[in-house]
Length: 158
Image (cartoon, rainbow, N blue to C red; front, side, top):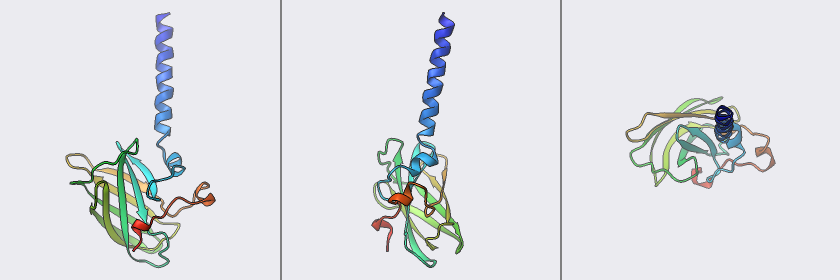
């Protein structure tokens, strides 16, 4: 009897853990309205929100902004953090060096166009921690975005 209870408890915990992991996968985060209109990704114990200029038809210097939060959406201080964003797309490869710019924000600039094929690899190092990495497709439209959109924020526009 005790063994059945233990197995049932273990199965219940496994289901809860699976649900929690799925709650932060890319597909779920793409359905979540990001606070600053960007795209959300999970990286370790953090959520990174990448905000890029949405209407840059040609490659030019544009801001790259990243907001840092925990999994509950609570801001995480960017003091002492460093990072880089590597943007890959039809207009080529560009890298932005990211520096703290406000309470929970990192900011840099890179030469990019707002094209659907753009991919971004973000690497952020918090003070005393190992680097965390996340991958983004900031201009790719998901099914949900096609019905109202979620990316784009005036804070990232020049």
